[in-house]
Each structure stands twice: as C-alpha cells, then as structure tokens.
Length: 274
Image (cartoon, rainbow, N blue to C red; front, side):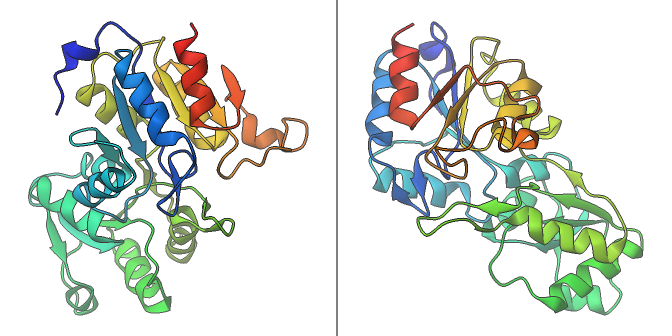
C-alpha cells in the first residue's frame, strides 16, 4: 500500500470501478489518464467497488491491464462483508471467488452447499453477485437463514452496468434469497456503514473535502453522504445522460452532486481546477 502521508495534502478520491473506470473491464476513454493526473497532483485514489465477485488481486490485475497501478488501493464489498464476520464463524457463500477470499482473510470457515444440505451448522449466509445463481442455491441459502443463520449481502445494487446495458446485479440475487427466507439482510457495501468504516480504516485522510466518484446516486451518492464528503456523479454507467432528478427522484434522494459530469476525466478536471 502507498504511504498515506504522500497523499495527505490533497483530497482523497474514492472512485467506483464499474461504470466509472470501465464497463465489464472495457476501459471508459480517459479514465486511466484521469487517475494518473490526479495522482500526479498529489491525490490518493482508492478504488471502492460493490463488485464482490473478483478477488482483490484480480481487480488489481485488471486495472493494471488498462494502465492503472492499483496495488493496495482496491476496496471491495466482499471485504466489507468479511468486516462483519467473526473468527471461526461458519459461512455459506453464495457468491464468487472474492467472497471466498475475504472470508478466509478473517479466519471464518466456508461451509459447502452439500454440507449445508446435510444439516451442517451455518452462522451466516453471505450473498454477492455470481452468474451461476440458480434455484438450488436459493433453496439452500433461504433454508439456512430460516434455520437461524444471519443473512449478509455484499451490496443491494439491483443492476450491474455492461457495454450492452444493465444486467441483474448482486442486489437482485440478495432480494430473491431475502424473499424466500422471509428475513431482511445486513448489507455491508456502499452506501452502508460497514464499507464506510473499512474505507476510513484504510485511509484516515477521508474527510469532508474527499470526493466519491460514482455512476449510481442511490449507492455512490448516499455513500458520500454516509462519509460526510462530496459526490461526483458521472454519466458513463447506469445513470443515463438524459436522466434528471425530476425523471427519477428516488435515485437522487439524499445524493446531491458536487459535480454532475460525463465521466471520470471531467471529474479530474473539476478537482484539479479547484
């Protein structure tokens, strides 16, 4: 991880990935250059993503592939979910490799779906985005929750941005398991307190001058409010250029933008122009 005092003179930038840096790992034009410009001016850039599917190392490698060195600067919702687990806790994972990695980091134990079916003890069911979600996964997860396990979601984003348009996100999977089990989840990613606590622990320099950059006001904008810092809305992801507060007021509730611009490159120009 980079030395924090190297970046202490300028506001910290908390940058989303999907819809801001890339769409399904296809880089958004100007994003890598924007990160380089911000860092050259003395800003620390952390990448704070609700994507829990990939491991931290895989995210770092993907960023390196598009020209961004992110070693030690990636925070995922899988890490925020692990933040609420206890050592030795038995966890049924409904998600990707990123969640498995995060569970192992805190010394919790992954319970296989077969063992859960055979009645093994499950303390928490941890849910994130994964493309192999099906009825049997929903059945096992909801059964474990009805038997007393805690339901934890890495995020509740209903959709995930891709170059071809939005697809169902981790929040849609979580909603299915929550409905089937009759239990409300503890959600840990943006915009909720567990992610805010994790980010502050990783970068104590986050203050009111920091900037959260994101494409979803209901997630990134509210996360900025949770942290007490500024929000930069970009129109390169799920929020279409034509969408306004009058069109979709629920998206913008509690998420007044400091700037509302096309992309990360425009955010960098605004920050560097202060």
